[in-house]
Each structure stands twice: as C-alpha cells, then as structure tokens.
Length: 575
Image (cartoon, rainbow, N blue to C red; front, top):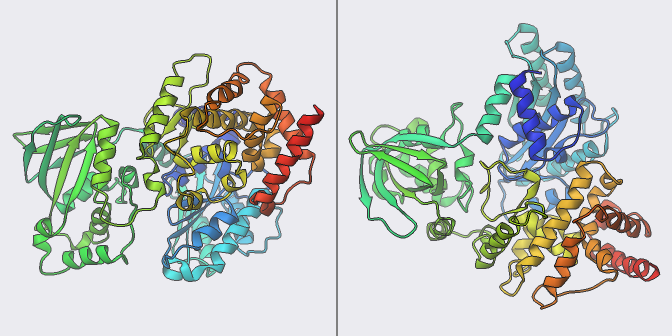
C-alpha cells in the first residue's frame, strides 16, 4: 500500500483504538469511514458499518435517513414515524481492495454481490450485518411514500489503494454496476464512484485538515470589542462568491461540515421559508436580496481582515446561522448574478460559552428538536468541565464529553474516547435509569420525548463520567476482541447496567442526585485501575447467559431489562 495512504489507515485505526492487524480489514474500515463521512456528519465507528463475516463482495453498507445514520430496523421504523413526507434517503455500498490496481474481475465480483443483494432475496451467503442491512433496506422500500422523490438514492464506491486511470475496460465494468442498480427500479438517483488513493487521501484530508477560507468583501463595518468577542464585522458580499469560497468544496458540492454548529440542518426546498427565499432569487427582487434576507452569521476562533483589499481570512469557521439561506442559494446557484448580494456577520470568539449564546440567540426563528439544545443546558457545561478535570488524573483514562458536535474534530484524540450528547445519554440511561433497552433503540426519539431524563440540574456530574467510563472500558474489550466481549456487542448497554451492581455486590438504585452517588461512582471507577475489571465484565456476561438469549426485538423491550435485573439479584446473592 502507498506509504502515505498506509499512514492514514494507521491514523484511523489508532483514533478508534482498533486492534485488528489484518491490513486488508483495516483498509476496509478506512474506506468505509472516508466514504460515509462524505454524507453523514455525526460521530460513528467504522467497525459498525463494516461487514465482519460472509460479505458477498460487499465490504460496507450504510443507510442514511434524514441525515441520521441508521444501524437497526428499529432506527429505520422510528425515522419514518415522523410527520415529514419528503425524507432524504441515501443507501451507500462500498467495496475495498487494498491492492494497487483496479481490476475487471474485482469489479465484476462486486457487481455480482450488489445484484444479488438488491434482489432483496439474496442467494449468496450473507453475514449478520448484511442480513440486518437487508432488513433496513426492506423497511426503506416499504416506506417509499415518505421518501423524497418516492425512491432512495444509492451511492456505490469501489475503492483501491491504486490510481484510477479511466481505462476502457474498467469504465465499462463500472457502467455495468450502474445499470445493475438502475435496473432494480428501487433507486431515484444512482452514483458509481471509483476511488483510488488520490480520492481517498483527498477525502481523508477534508475530514482531518483545518477549515480555512478567504472571502472578498464588497464593504464592511467593524463592531466594538466586547467580552469574549475580540472582533466582529458586518459585511456585504456577492452571494455567488460567498458560496464558492465559504460554502462549497473543490468538487462543487455543499460543504456540510461548515454547518456543524448550526442547530438546524437544511430543511429542504419544500420548506415554506426556503420556497420564499428561492422565489426572491428567481424574481425581479433578486438584486434586493441583501435587504430582504436576514443573512448569514459566521463564527471562528480566528479571523483577520486586510483593510486595504477588504479580504476576510477565516480559520476553522462555522456557519451558525443561515443554513437555510446558504443551501437555498446553492440550489439556485445558476440563477445568481453579480447583482445578488448577501449580508454576512463575522464573529471571532474562542470562548465556548460565548459561541453557545450566539448559536442560541441566532437560531430561535423556527421549531428545533429538543435534542439539539440539550448541549446548551448549564448542566451540560458543568459535565464537560467535570470531564476536563478528571483528565488531570494520570491514573484514569482520558475521556471527553463533546457538548457541541465535532468540538474535538481537529484535536489529536482517540475517537473512541469522545462521547457526544446522544452517546453519553445512552451510557447514562443504561447505568442510572436502568433503561438499556432505550439505549439500544433510537435514542434521538428518547431524548425528544423524555423531558429531563438527562442533564437535570439535580444530577451529580460524576454519574455521567462514571457511565461513560464503564461503557468505554467494555468497548475496548469489544474492539480488542477480548473475553468474548464481541459476542455481547448488541447487549453492551445491558452489560453497562450490570457492571456497577457487580462491583458493589448487589443490585442498587442510587439516585444521581443523592449524597451517596459520589462514593458509589468512585468505587466503580476505581475497579478499573487494575486488570480485575475484566473479571467483573465476565460476571456481567454470566448473568446475561443465565437467562434465555434475547431476540433483537426483546433487547429493545423493558421486560428483558427487568428480567436481567432479577437475574442479577439471584446471581449476586449466590456469590
């Protein structure tokens, strides 16, 4: 494998603490991560979207519904329960070959696997992950009435570490794959991409490199310095230049990553507000757009303006308000002339709290799902500070709470040590709310319907840290394929619930706001300071084995959690 690409593959495996030694498998993880990251902006582990058993020449499968990565049928069903009737759905297939060339035979085998899989009744052997993906695809097909254009889109990637030279035979083989997908009549839009090392390295760079841009302003005014904001400006720029320099990548696609700190994702062209924006852009008042539109707000830890040329330089910037405007401009880019201008507000701030206040203040114009604002609660800030303090203890693992999405994106941190709002919620409700069945489900729905289930003002921060610690340590056993841990991967949230009981030798219901919680959590965390914790996890697995193995459906039901609690009581009494 090419030396630089090999280093990138190594960087990824280090980031996710993957102990796999097989180079071809590591390359699969890398390709799947790079490809899916083009379409899904949240955190995910490449192991979770990579086939592990019989793969029928399919190394990676991912389903993205309405911007969410779907990994279970329950996730898919819940996604379609929404009131929306025009959900975007992308199906992604990846085949990765670590060799140095594109070959017709490899592509033909990939096509055969796709053809069989897309029959929706495959004959080739398929492992557990493929079978689960098949069930998700069947769920998508059953809900086409709720999908944009009444059919999902499909993105197919054939990846190698070699160089793609557009050879006739290879291009013809790729066209055959496209026909295979089109002939199923399942998909609306079909894309087939050959990804060689140049494409892979460029995509990896887009994920890991700094976010920088320079923009020519028509005019601007400065705003006085204020606490936490050393400088800020209000400017007018040409809308097309704003798109090309700030919001689009070199391939002409929208740069989704610059909206990471925007509370709302793009609501689509059918949204009434966005329809009005498009109407203005396509009407006689397009030249008045800067007056008729609220504009865009950009925040960055570092901005610099050249007063003589009126050029603004930005580093690691985020569009925190104006996602709808920017995306609607992008959808109408062919209508933009030099007469179409837009107001852009630039704010420099390295203060996280100031940034959150600005995000809140500039994103209050339409309904936002509850989960988007969990991170803005005062308790969330206190929990993050608690995590920060704990990292000063060299005896403990260095864990991070990512209160804001992708807050640690450009930091050299193992990805498996970073817990965002949804993942921390899963850990917490498993250990201290005894709801691992909900953690196994569509946690976004749980957060939006459960009020103060997490981040209550009364909660002690140590409970959240303890929850993440337990889940992290079991995850290291899963990734390291130790102690049969991978066998219990689907039950990892149930293992997390059991672990404190095993450490304390009894089933207890300790309120996270009680005085006892600090000592309770300390004992759990101290259990990890030597290798004996692996025996504790073995006991958790023995408790699980002491009752009937649950089906996928039973895992997501409260009854199984309750049965496991009873089993734990009986097991610990005997011990």
